[in-house]
Length: 268
Image 1 (cartoon, one colour):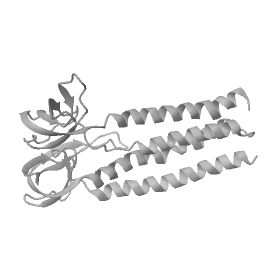
Image 2 (cartoon, rainbow, N blue to C red):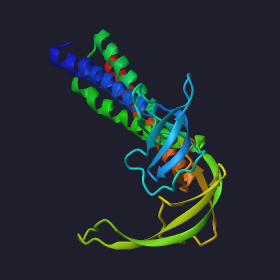
Image 3 (cartoon, rainbow, N blue to C red):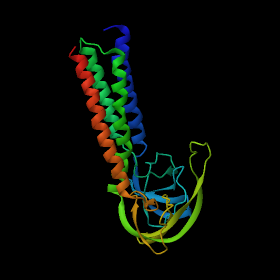
Image 4 (cartoon, rainbow, N blue to C red):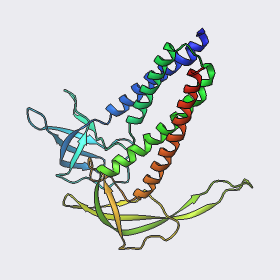
């Protein structure tokens, strides 16, 4: 194996594999949290919570993470999850159920490390020919990274029945066509109401529709984050399943191509 082949077949997969695993494991560690109980509401974005610790409850201020907006206020008695407070910490961020999964990326990193070891021990060389199947094999893991997290979120979420209480129209720009001229369409965004943990909450939907807008009073399915009762969605689970099927099919094709290419190279 030449020096260049060693870099392409061993060093690059090994480096990418380790980097991917460290990257996703660090991201996963930021989703760790502990349960807390809301004892005082200061504003829609900030509450005082009691965090259970071995020596007894510890009171700290908890705030929503950046990007979490347009949510109903928490109520006294709500159970939320927050980052574990440090010894001298008086303010923490809330954490939520992850919507992406670190497992596919960790598996992909282990696969690259395994391949690097196998390439190192093999008398055969694929050279730059390994690049295409190496990249192609990442496609299913990228899809499963999102699909696995979304599906896990829906499986963990608390399901309740809500009611549409309001709607609003919003004009949305569409992509430009072949003539280079963009258009627009009117989307209807519903506001739904749901009851959970003894409190009634309202939230504007994150899902828009331009056909068959919902009617006031129409029942809707609502999935609520088990780590925070004000994070709720009414999007459809079948759409997640559709993405998952596409991910599985793409994964089978890409991985089969990947291993066939490697097997052909190793067989001489």
